[in-house]
Length: 163
Length: 251
Image (cartoon, rainbow over all chains, first blue to last red; front, side, top):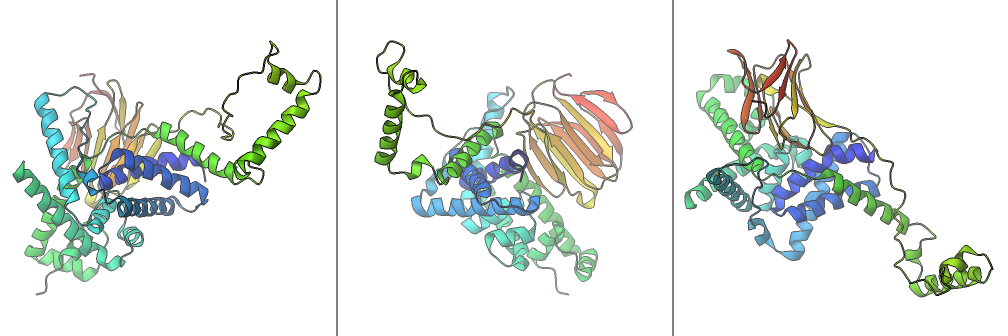
């Protein structure tokens, strides 16, 4: 497996997934890098889609393990302010920060499995891949995803009403 | 009439379920069609909200770090690895070898040990064995292909610098393909792709068959193609039948 090509193809999406999942950028990078190290250390090979599924599944398990050990769920609520690449007005910057905070709070309000399903789907995974990674029946992914989306949307509305 | 479940509607929306009877029901049932429209709207809202959480990713330094860690793990498994020897034995072997070598007149170890002034050279931390660094390479662009369900595709590009070339190309392929410089990140699902770009040119290849295609760069709509025709709204510097070139920040 080509190290550079594999890394370029999967690392960015993996960090984003872990960041969305944990709310902690440093932890997300640690977990994404550990997943990559394990991928090459275990000499996992196969089609790109299979490698991607393996990486995300490994990262999901690492996140679960970290939380099991630390129980530090509050980290999810830590704010990571957006650093815009172009200058924007203070009002726009504040709006963006608040919207980001609401999204994070809404995500934190979900049960862990709902969060994982939602984030995997919005990272582009098929239902079959999600089922394998989250260890649920493929036939139930639609139902679980619908529920996760609805809960997330409701939590987003609640977060919007309380800020 | 039994309506489709919420899960079935979401699966249909995502192109994960295509049973004839479900599709027929959706066609005939106003309530289920309404539910599907609501599910699509919710999906767009979820996608937009999640995208707010993303930051640009520094792939290059992470790659170097991971490569180092892999090399370290592999070297630590080597049968003659220093790290597997008890420290005392390793130090003893090193000293005995150095001592023997330094006893030889003209030995480079003797020169190192005594230093040019004849004094013992200061001790330094032993270098970590990290394996061979790879030769410098030109970073290769990275890219994705995204399914275009129902002929709809929305591409969002972020993180560009002023002067970035963004080419939009119309192609015969039924998928959308986006390539960006190495280190760029992608978030994508059916009908939607978001790019967090590192500096360099970006190419967005869109299917000619798309019925609704949009390209947004840094929050500005550059291009929209719908049943009403093609609207070029961004800073286009070249425009052909198959390719439109935009350069960010030129208008």
